[in-house]
Image (cartoon, rainbow, N blue to C red):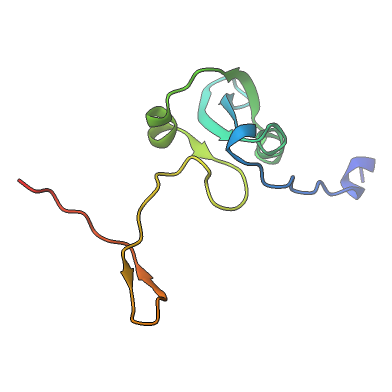
Length: 105
């Protein structure tokens, strides 16, 4: 048994939108495995757990690209998710669901 197998890595705490890192990751053969985002610790934890490595961290990624192409690897709710208004509530004010928006034309 290796010495490092005795110590299990703990998942890092969830970060907010201001601490998000955007990364291009690759597998052990060097092929592109995809784009991920989370805090620096969350991205590194994800890569260690899945035998991947970070090719580069990216700057100036548009929000639309993050929502469509990037996978969130952190814990909890995705901080870059699209905001959806809640309009459906019952008489007591409890949450029922989200409003479904339909095309007008």
